[in-house]
Amino acid sequence: MKWWLNLLLVLILPLLQQEFLDWCPWVAKRLMACAVRFLPAEQRDRYLREWIAELAAYDGRNLATLVMAINILIRAPLTGRAVRGLEREEAPTLRSSAGLPRFTRVARQPPQPTGSKASQPRVIAIVVNHNGRAFLRDTFRGLAAQTRAIDDVLVVDTGSNDGSAEWARSRLGDDAVMAVRGQFGRAVMSALRDQRTAGMDWVWLLHDDSAPEPEALEWLLAEAESRPSASILGPKLVSWTAHDRLQEVGFAVDRTGRAVSPIEDDEIDQGQHDQVRDVFFVNTAGMLVRRGALLNVGGFDERMPAFRDDLDLCWRTHLTGGRVLVVPQARVRHFAAAASRSRRTRTVNHPRYLIERHTTAAMLKATSLRKLPLALLLSLVGGLVRAASLALTGRPADALQVLWAWGWNVKELPVTVVQRRRLQRRRKVDDSALAPSAPLSG
Amino acid sequence: MTLATLQVLSVLVDEPLARHYGLELSKQAGLKPGTIYPILGRLEQARWVTSAWEDIDPTVVGRPQRRYYQLNPDGAQAARRALQKAQRSLARGARGIPEPGSSPA
Image 1 (cartoon, rainbow over the protein chains, first blue to last red):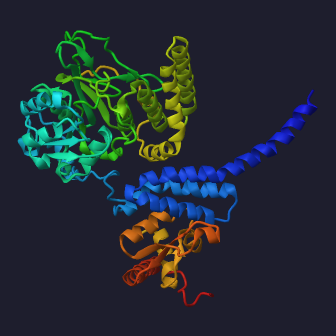
Image 2 (cartoon, chains in turn blue, purple; image 1 turned 180 degrees about the horizontal axis):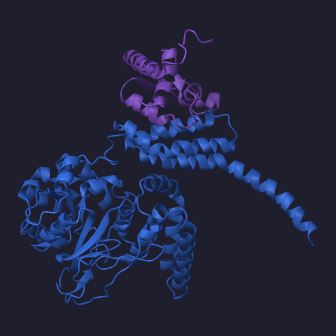
Image 3 (cartoon, helix red, strand yellow; image 1 turned 120 degrees about the vertical axis):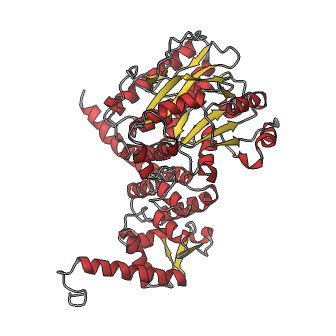
């Protein structure tokens, strides 16, 4: 009974080993393709060729070649900053709190009940527009009507073809509208690299279909300034058409990072959620975020076009010691054009796929190594159960979306691992401290 | 300037006219393979070194073209100055240790 098992093992193990070694060069090349994505676009071809030639020149065994490839990959962000002409110390996506010189932060530390006008924080509103012609007028009106003046407004247009970019230019002037290829996260990151955001303390992010009510910014800022550890603050999102219908007041998450909202579908707002609370994450529509904190965690993950890019950002902010609050007195009307699939652009047309994909990616980056095996197992089982139930109830296409999301995460694993290393090195808060959020007492 | 950068510079300065590819250079500088590219990127960005593709036909030689790095005249001068400065500050820190001239080669 046992001898054939041994024989099988003796035969198979060397085969497996050989197979693995033969795959190493292929894997190494795949890693190089991932590594060049940390470089500026115009340098990628050159470095891909260079690195593949270097790997070929290495006379080490296959495994050693793989180690060299991993070395290149984990230093790819450094190489990227080097060829962009940014020294390690002053890289803007790193620890530049340039907009917040230390002494002003210390000066603001003692809580002053009567607002001292001397150190008024500066706020820039960044409106990301993509074919938002139908909404932009209301969004601009909302900005113009703010009771707390906004210091600057920057519109980032991501390739609209409905005339909304031209309309925005006609209202705000040419230099207030940037054109960027890509989606929300990339648009915000481009805006942060722009000179106009340099001296700002706070960044107020808005979608083209999110119109703030007049006191929104005043409420958000008041909370922000009274709690120095608050890095991200979100408003209460209500329906675009019916102002008494709640949409979002922040989210909690379960063990695998899946979002849990305290709100039922179409719940009517009777003030039942009107309490400033610590939450796990808030939507990017109407999100007020400390510029220094945003840069410190490396900004948005530009691989995430929409959905749960907010979860990913807030999760990383938690790990670096920042708090995420929802301030329900600040109200923003939100159409949620992408979630209702009225955007009709290819990249954001599969909410289920993107939500699965980005939730898993965020979990892979943020969960501590000790808890990762369990979280991974749970989310794998959860994903399989969801896929199976979707398939069994006659929705095979939706089931495939769940599986594709896992495929994407396997394909993107090298990039995720590099980002994970950078995040975990910056970690200040243990996972156990990210307990379910309780209401604030004061 | 980091120690690794100084190591790379000292190899480059030894033969200012020689061309190196990344792997060879990292071997001579005593760095782990694959760790040199941020340094080279920074040096190239600062215009101390220039790089160019190897002038071969990959189909004839049977391997891909390498990227060769070479110190340019300005860079050679700057590198020498940087190395001397580092040496001076090291010497100050290591007073009790014998001079390089008196130690066996």
